[in-house]
Length: 366
Image 1 (tube, rainbow, N blue to C red):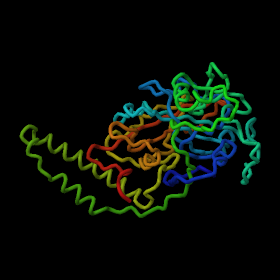
Image 2 (image 1 turned 90 degrees about the vertical axis):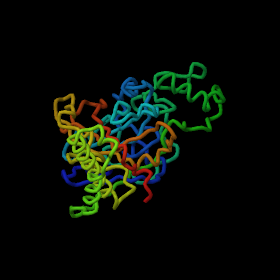
Image 3 (image 1 turned 180 degrees about the vertical axis):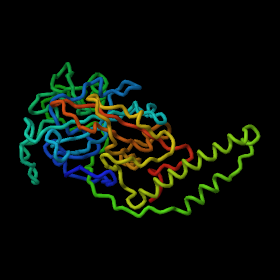
Image 4 (image 1 turned 180 degrees about the horizontal axis):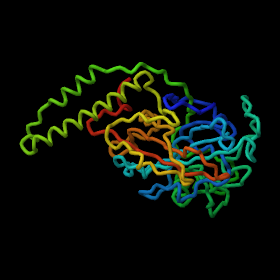
């Protein structure tokens, strides 16, 4: 997020998608963005290839989004970006299972070897200064042509294109490289459909509304609680039915609160509130303090931002069967934002899905 992200525990900044010139989404501009290839912050200490694999299918994950979130008053967090990756194997998305996603934190002091001390200019740089997408200019780290992650393997025929592994080399070969390998002409294909569509993340503060009881929601929840279910009544004890009704009512209340909260800005794809609280979509699968592991430095992790289901609309990943899906993705990061030189630090992600009877906001007309 551009600017200072020191929000109070109650303040929320909303993220929206917007088209942008490609140069604005490159590393020297410190972008917040969705899709495309990662605009790496530090050019050293990038996540390892095993660290970027899905823990379920073990295939390379795709870059989903990054959030530029510096911390005011902390020199080692003058530049600070969080990177989120997700698997593209639809079958890996099972209910409330976050093993198909990973998040990393990178941060740098203002004076560093990669970027000028002063802010980047607002004008587009000369065309001859465009960075090589296949290698990081200062560290020399080679990047995979398909996904933009570290790639230490090269095409055995032309030795000019790098890959993170055999899987992405095969994808590129079938997509375009079979025709272009060894050719002296510049490639006319610059990206692979493995990538999500690229957009800038722009932000604005959420307008606070006075909290008040929603009588319609309460009435609807009460009606659902009173509904009879004869087929279950024959097989379950009365106490079991009361427990189920209470559970369904609480879940419905939580979901109605979620829908009401996002209604003023239905196109929000991200909510940022470091030290605040997530907006849950369900009363089920909400983490306790014990569910959030501490950072490797020993400090407690705190909530920083969440990814909303509305983002799914822009990913062009619709499927009739299993699909990439979530209710919300809550990202927890080190409360001390510990600094490990140029290393990318893994952080924690909690995936919460919708209940089976809840209508997905991404398909709700607005």
